[in-house]
Amino acid sequence: GKRRGECTEWQGMTRAMGGRANLVWRDVEMLTPQMLEGVAGCRCLDLTGNRLTDIRALRDLNHLDTLILDNNMLTSHLKVPPMPALRTLWVNNNNIANLSIFIDQLVASTPRLAYLSMLSNNACPNFFNGGSLKQYHDYRKFVISRLRHLTQLDAQPVTEEERREAIRLYGDLASSVAFEEADEGDAEVRRRREEEKRHREREEVEKRRAEKIRKRQERKEAARLRRERETAIALARQQEEERLDRERARKLGARPPSHARHEREIASLLPEVDAAAAPPAAAIAIPLDLPEVPGAGSLPAIAVPGTLTDSEEWSSDEDWDQ
View 1 (cartoon, rainbow, N blue to C red):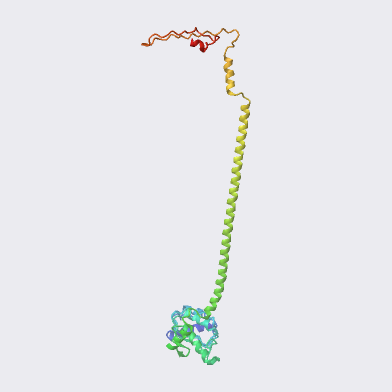
View 2: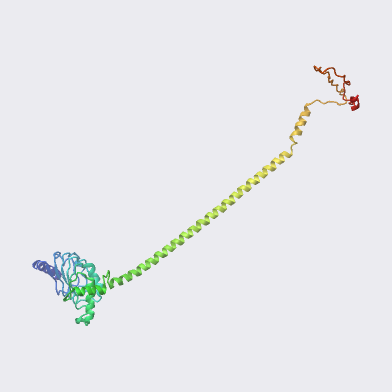
């Protein structure tokens, strides 16, 4: 009932004050959507004197220009929701100790921030918490180098000379020390991931190499088996040819030669003849009458012996001379 009454009172104050709302010194520990009903168009919100540690419920206040969070329990790791229109932020007297982490949140969430007050926080060394003047100047230069649209820091405006000096000392930082620390953690994660990636790549290379070796051995084994099979086939063919040759030689050795067989076949067809009872061979008469040669005259007569038989001998050369 108390929070319901606070919510109703807050909405009434918001309407009455024309866009300005406050809920101060109420010991509120957590902002709820019910508490923020009716203040979506609020431009200035004062939450001083509560016990807040989280302000993410303010993410729907897109038109918020001024936010006062003094005297709460905010820390360096405060999750600041996106506030594109916010130009003034007071976080005095909180528990902010790490400047880098907190400023990184503001850089990411409040791009138009022009007025920031962080007094009475350990992250802001000054007279109130025992810090030296040099420490405070260093603090200012770091914050100014990170928040480029800042025109006033704490109770003092930001001068152009101070801005140039801040940029000269810290440069155009893409990330602050906090981001660098986070990057170191990210770098460790990236390093492990790179190592895992290289390990996987080595395993993949080894796997491909082993696969190549296995395939090469399979090809060699297949070639060896093919050679053995071809050798076995050639040997079997040779043995078969030798067997056929032996078979043909055996068959040929059982038969007589073909020409002798033919002679016996022809002899079997001829009649048998007794050589002793056979009559002598008849004499063969050879005529020696020569025709006359015209103009040759008469030639002397040549004595020609009678017809010769096989049993008679030829005359000698002396007979021919006579």
